[in-house]
Length: 93
Image (cartoon, rainbow, N blue to C red):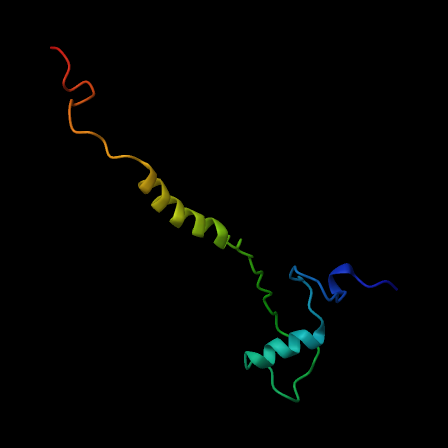
């Protein structure tokens, strides 16, 4: 008899399984104080399997470049000379 793929234990398994073994269910029920020693291992209560969503890590390099980049661009841009006002506001009527 073959074993279901979701029940195989691999060292690098990153996803959560929908099917738990009886031992895993008992351990989770004990942690939630829903199962005591002496209870029957048959007809166990349902145990919810929480799926974890992995968040993407932000790159520290970009954050550092953005902080330095704002300072560098402010230093590089020359100040605007005071003089004529540009744009449509100062145009003819």
